Structure formats: C-alpha cells, structure tokens
Image 1: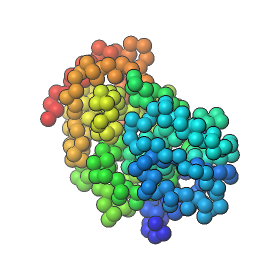
Image 2: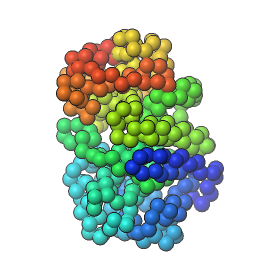
Image 3: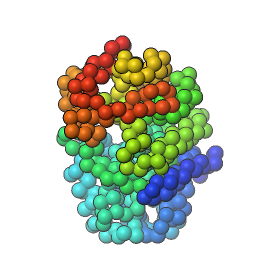
Length: 368
C-alpha cells in the first residue's frame, strides 16, 4: 500500500469528551504509525478477528513499528456477530492485562463493526479507559460505527445492551480495504450509507439511486468522497449530542425495527440489510400516518431496492415486537422512534407499544 494515490481527507470530530480526526483515503494504512504516534506515547495492542487479521494485521503492526511504537502480541477473536458477547469481551480484557498494558497505552481496533464495538468497549473498561484507535475495514464501520464513540456487546435479550460511550483518539479508514470485502457484505453496508443520505443529503440519495455504490478499485475516489460525506453527517450530529439525549437519536433511523429484525433472525441477516428493511418499513408507516409524503417514502424504497437490499420483512410481528420491547430506546411503556419527515430531515416521536404494533403493520403494506 505504498502508493497513497489521492490525498487523505480529514474530518475533525469535536466531541465534548474528546476531539479527534478521521483520516479517509486510499493507502492510509501506511500512515497509521505516524497518526497513532500523534495521539500519545506508549505501547499498542492490535485487536482483530480471524477474517481481517490475516489480511491487514501485519501491515498495521509494521506501520506502528516504523513509527517506533512498541507493539504487544495481538489479540484475535472469532469473526462474526456471535462473538460480540460478554465472554469474548472478558477474554480480551484478560489479554490486555496479560500483556501488561498501562494507561499510557492504546488498543488498535482493526476490523469491521463487531471489532470496533467490542475492542472499543474493552479499551473503555480496561484500567477505566485507555486510548483506542479505530481502523475500520468494512464500509459499515467506516461510515458509521467507528465514529461517535458508541461501544457495546450483545445480550441474549437484544443487541448492544451492554456498552459505553468511549470516543476514539483517531480513526483511520483506508478504502482500499474494501476491495477485500465480500460483495454481499459490502452491499449490506450500504444500508447505513442510505440512512445517512436520508437524514441529511438529498443529493447523495439521488446519486446513490441512480448509481449504486461499488467497491471496485476504479471507484476509490468516489468511495473516499462518499465515506467522508457520511462521516461529516455523523460528525455534525455527534458534536451536537454526544450521548444521545436529543439530536443523536435521529441516527437510529431504521434501527428500531431493524435491530428487531436482526435479533429475531438470530443475527443471520446483516446489520445494514436490517436497517434498510427497517428504514423502508418506517417510511411506509410514516406515509400512512401522514408524517411524511408518499413520495418521500417511495424515494427511500427506490434507493434501497437499487442496491439489492431488502425493503421489508416477513418475520412474525409478535416476534419483532418482543425485541422492540427490549430496545434501548424504550421508556416505560413507550418507545422513541425516528421517522423520515422529508429527505434531509428526521423527527423523533414517542409512541406506545400498541402504536408500535400498528406501525409494523402499516410498514408492511405495499411491500413487494
């Protein structure tokens, strides 16, 4: 990855608890060592998983050593959402302790969203918090989970129910890593890209509908531009509301139903696909309720369909409602939902569990 190609794009995230830069480009893994060095002194430990580690861990550790950074023996866990649990988290924490990392040291979270979530949480908990540098290798992680400081693992009752807000000290997104991502996983990740476009960028939504995103090497410049724009959208929301008391809740667009679909499928469906389905179902329901126009709903569904993502779910309504009742956004007998008021603007509404059942039914009407 010596040819850096285009220049690295920087997005500064001014979160209240910690400000940091997101570095996006083609070949940015080569710059990792110098970027980490600027965040502080100390040793590093790469946490990765069994699919990504063989591809990029050596390059990452070489970049760190070239910057005169001491590298501890890496920690690797089995790839996949089922590993995002308390037992694997405990093993990673024991591994950090065995390597005698101190508060001056840092975790390098190398991988997709699962790695970023569990390695970020390990960094947040170990010694009450050490630095974490997020190195996302999937599109989903680049545009969403690596930015904003949310870290978590799953419980049997639902997704991301144990976690902490822990901002990274830097994020390094190399779009060349996307060339090694299986096409199905890349397409799945586009669900979050579409969500961001619905939230804040109508022109991007139209572009994605007309020309679905591709992981082709010839598309590196476009990928870097789209990833950067997505990071900017999330940055603006996180800077205004770091801990999800207000505006940050809008980033959950598509997630209330989407997380339920994900959990009800026993995590056999990808996160982005579930968000896409939840986004379409909520858009249809909002149109039926008069919270948005039919054209707004149709534009969302068209973009999702153009990427080959699901526009709905045939899972039993009672099963979805069971998981939605355990959602983090529940308040007593009500749940906060996010609806697309128009392309570029979303609203948070509080509804009862009974109203949520109605929305699921309405969201299925017209699904093909």
